[in-house]
Length: 227
Image (cartoon, rainbow, N blue to C red; front, side, top):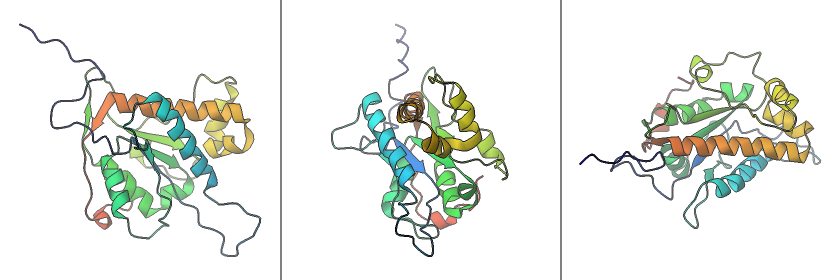
């Protein structure tokens, strides 16, 4: 008797089931260091990234079922460039299902950003039945990178571009100024919709692919440029 076709949202073959405690997405970004001469009135230089992470997590809690007590995402808030990876970070980048990279001139130059990208990119992606996606990496334009060389491996992956917005002009503004620019200029409802579209993209890749675990034991062995 012929077996029924698996549904698109079923788990892959046995042996590749996801760890329910693993983060759904990993937010990779270039951590901004405080100024050498601190100015009291200046806010946390990474506050906009923290806000983005919080809003993405909130939307994904509504889009994807998670076990009680598990957070949908991982964002490292402790490591500055050049410090050693913590075991928690190594496990997160080695077990998450979607890798979200906030592209900026600084991101393209930081060795540790490249190591995060390369650690995830080395893992095996198994598309679920009916999926046409071959990667679970989401490059997001954080600030303009027009004046910098973007590695071909990044260019080969579809850039997140927000669509179905109330004002289509916002899409062009995103392509010119990045998401950081939108956060500074668009109104709150417009920003929320852009972030929701990004959450939808993360959820789409979560349902489309299964990424096999692959925890790096020696992160310093990873290439310091994006391959």
